[in-house]
Amino acid sequence: MAKYVFVTGGVTSSLGKGIIAASLAKLLQARGFKVTIQKFDPYINVDPGTLNPYEHGECYVTEDGAETDLDLGHYERFLNIPTSQANNVTTGRIYQSVIEKERKGDYLGKTVQVVPHITNEIKRRVQLLGQNGDYDIIITELGGTVGDIESLPYLEALRQLRWELGRDNCIVLHLTLIPYLNAAKELKTKPTQHSVKELLKTGIQPDILVCRCERPITQAIRRKLALFCNVEIAAVIQSIDAETIYDVPLLMQEENLDSTVIAKLRLIEKRDPKLDKWENFLKRFKNPDSEVTIGLVGKYNELQDAYKSIYESFIHAGAVNRCKVKVKPIHSEAITAENAAEHLSGFDGILVAPGFGERGIEGKLHAAKYARESGLPYFGICLGMQCAVIEFARNVLNLENAHSTEMEEQAQNPVIAMMEEQKKIKNMGGTMRLGSYPCDLKENSLVHQAYREAKITERHRHRYEFNNKYLEQFEEAGMIPTGFNPDTGLVEAVEVKGHPWFVGVQFHPELKSTVENPHPLFVAFLKASMDYRDK
Figure: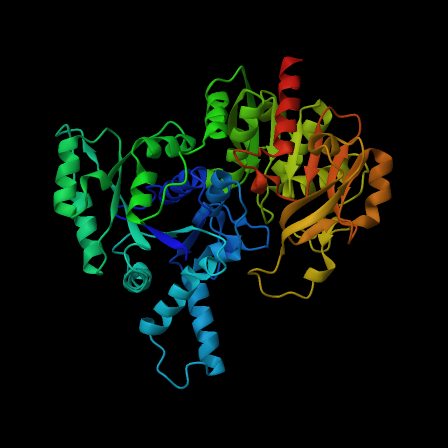
């Protein structure tokens, strides 16, 4: 039987429940336990696929094609194992499932209510991953903050589960804030006390307190929190601000978080945590031999979480190259034909980010043109590849009104066009080309050299594709397709002949980069950027 750890949050949002959950999971995994993490989000969207990146950060796509919360990216990057549709559930999906059952008559005429029907569905979803014996421990992060109206059904389901499974099989870790008041020159525990009392109102007593703080908490504060929050002193865990999120597992190990969880779940410790690879990664990351500056050309730069996986992929690849990567965002709407050199000339490489819609497209085209003509290393992801194709069609092939039908439906030369299977689809949510697909790489190409293998699989999230009607023209002019889907012939990667490093890919390599397996394309791009810098 799987054991369950629930992670709740109090006082304020954005305290880092996902990082704490991932860090705990990493420590338990390093001890030999089979662990996974799932996220329950209280919003009514069925999934974050239709959300603007400004609303909720990036939409993370799993191997099986689920559009999920960005915290699943943290889970995969820490644990180095894939997640799935079952690892992310929203209120929208819960209610959708209950309503579908009601329409089919599954409730035999009963009045459908939050309790028991919604809470029963939440409990069923919570335990799905534990049914096949694949995991020893399942960590469940409950989104939102204790006290939010939308979180109440989840807390009620948790209360019931604790009673049904027993305290040895289901524990609650509550993440709170211990603010430091500069005027008083002291840390304050009252917000945490109130947060725990709010949780107690729902019938849930936390087993472990993880306290986010800017300064170390004293033993006196730990005793005070233990007394007033009704937890053991050993279960009051300090989570002080860290230099990087990758320090957090080691900080949590120093606080004995993993040992405390193991004791409370009545588990037998398998071994001491083996974190050699993790520590080696941190050593390389914190002690670089050189530095490169990469320009990230995008249109959601106001919110760094919109490109979270890209930023983290640079960290992983930077450690491999023993190189500090300074990523500077450049808003694509600010780039024009006249000022492209002014914006881009100081970089060692540029990455043109994925996105949707017409806004900021011209700036991305100018960035691709500047990189192609100047020899600056270029990495285009999804829309970034499509922009490279459009720019090449306009300025090298001289195709009049070359564009994507996403931006201009009646383009005279639609070098990027909607996929055939997408043309009849009307609903927006969950209907793109999603998830992992195979790709064959052209021998001796830049992508082939990066992967060191001819057949790969990568994750996708798009509706539009390279128009193969123009394939021959592009090849003759020097933009070479070097990656193809073996089943459909879809162009997955393009390169510019004679350029030091100019690669565009239709897929999202950033979604598969982890601490233990940095993505080869990011590693190769940074190596090319270092070579460009040295020139």
